[in-house]
Amino acid sequence: MKAKLAELIPEWQGKVLDIPIATTSLSGSCAVITFAEEVQKSSWAGYRRIVKVWPYAAPTAGGMEQVEAWCDVLIRKLHQTRLVDDTGAAFTCVYLGAADSDHLDLTGTLLTRPIRFGVYVPEPAGEEATTLVNSSTATITAASSSIEPADPWLQALNRWTHEQLGEEWTLYNDAWPSGYVAPSILWRLTGVSSAAVGTSTFELRKQWIGHVYGMSEQQNKRIAAELVERLNAVVKLPLHTEERRYVTVGEASADVQADAFLNGQIRLTLFRRTSRDLPNAPLMREVHQNPVLDE
Picture (tube, rainbow, N blue to C red):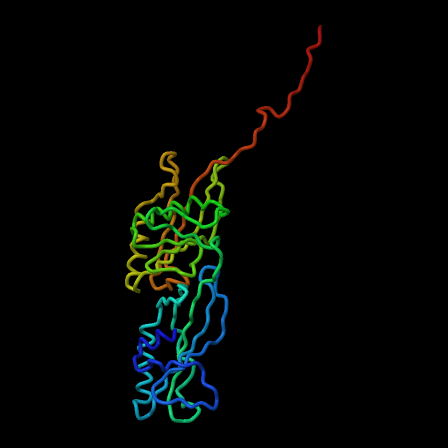
């Protein structure tokens, strides 16, 4: 985070500091970065840590106008931006607004206005928590042999998505991994329901949310809209072509204003009708014997 701040604001090279002690005075253009609360957000997005950035400028070097200009740069360049640390772990920054009003530093010589960012970090869970779809084969792979086979409906959805977007896009299932990349798609299951259709058939429905995490907001909106349009056009996704088994697209919609990393833009319902396994039962429940009496 410090390196990114110094990259965005060249005047801060070597001047992005931790919170100073009370006896230390700041000098010239600089920034202070502090960490606030850390909370669990969701099973797929991990936890959120609040980061406060304090840009400082002297009244003789632009004062609050300079602070506002720096804040504008940080908001435009950091909001919805994916950063990677030295270990390869990725996190996303989201602008959360100003943290306080304009004020002077402790010595009364520098002006500042703190702004807040939410840093969303996927949990460093085991390989079982996240399924990565290999971009070249569109088949689900996992590091542990103990992982249960993936849902065939999800496999069908992964294959179809790969066919639409190609090898440039990486597909994830269930949760973002710690080293997620862009552009990528995350499909996660949110609900399952079933309803009887007659005495011998029932309909199984599954609801999915799709996260379109592209290289820009414009790409996110375009790809989300295109996927929904194509899902509604295709009608069915093949589970097993040779056995002629399919799942049907019940409903597909997109909220292109939704947060790509946290909430996901696509809402998808798939369904399939399946025959019930009726119990084996005798054709006749009872047999009564009435002997014929001789006359």
